[in-house]
Length: 175
Image (tube, rainbow, N blue to C red; front, side, top):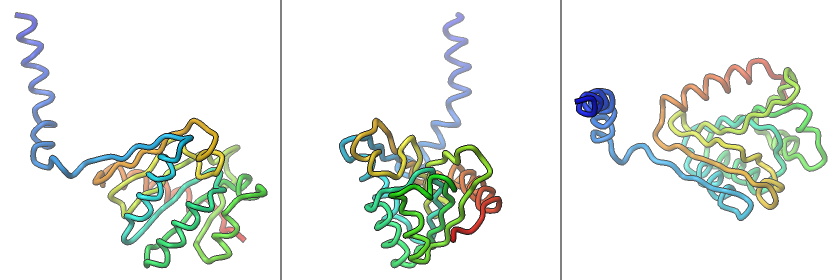
């Protein structure tokens, strides 16, 4: 009897979710990569390449020339690329932030926190790349890190975009 009641309650809770998934079975998907080994970099590059209108990046460290090139390529395709980065990390020796700013990408530096430790990219307000993966050569080649892209998740992407805009508003333009 208790088991039957538990199953009935679970069915009531889970049924709307299952119906929603059945209505759109192929819409929501993900890509996942781990480093070292390169799959994190591949996942991030795929996310950037998928953008059609806008990329909103928030980052701590950024030393990967491969990712910088992917962002430049996206901008060449007409994608609006904007970055909020950690002020202190952007001044490190191998940071790509100043090169991207010199190239003309809109970049703001956040110095409000001890560490602006975000690592995410909102893609067309419909997808999201996030995880522990710093956009660095060290993350690609040496660190145990992960990158996750959630595709067709506009509600989650809009929440991250709202946080990105808050960070953008409190940050100062890169010089």
